[in-house]
Image: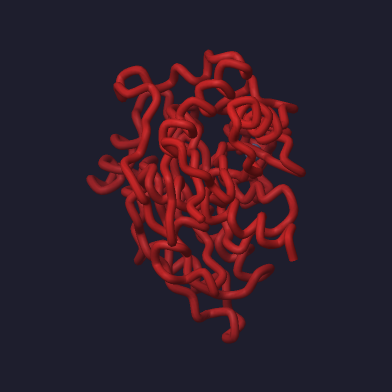
Length: 299
Ligand SMILES: [Zn+2]
């Protein structure tokens, strides 16, 4: 049976998924990209209703085996414990609310809530026939997300890995010191370079500006450090790099730092691949993760 995937961040994207691919067009809300960001203002009850409406549209009267909802934030046991981008969701079991609304409309289906980076990892695994492998993905944007497929129980806040003991590194959105996001996050870079946009920092570094060049090196060292930590804990493998700021990554520089940090030969067989971020991957991943979660409950 088909399942439904939902990606909720600055906008909503909802799609019907069949056999690891979209089975119809994506439903977007708001329909105009210019209105994106409206979700952050929306009360929880309205947001749940809007999601329910979109799910009904993509189902068009058909049944689904599962609904997967991907949201940015720390999710445990179905509860969104922290969500800086959609703060109204903190402490809310959004899956249960949506399932109840769907039931009221005659649709009985389990709703599984997962982290958006985990959904992207599941989507990449599903669309690239890697569901039998461990897939890891870095999402570089305002914040830094780290997703893994298969999902593991835990907080999975890879963007907040400690990459430096320098107490001056305090730009992370969470307020913690020394975090990866404090160096790599878009918002954090704007706080550090009050007079320059991140694009300008990377451009000036290429022109030889010393302050910018030193920062770009630090940015890549931090990225290599967090990746090395994941390799040391979880083993070597294939990593995807996506998100708007993947364009800043110099893979050669990153590799040279990683080589200095991961020296045990059984851990050195790693590969890295840039992929464009799109709603489709996250929607497919949310649906696939919901199917997997449903299957585990039944067995
Ligand atoms: Zn942090």
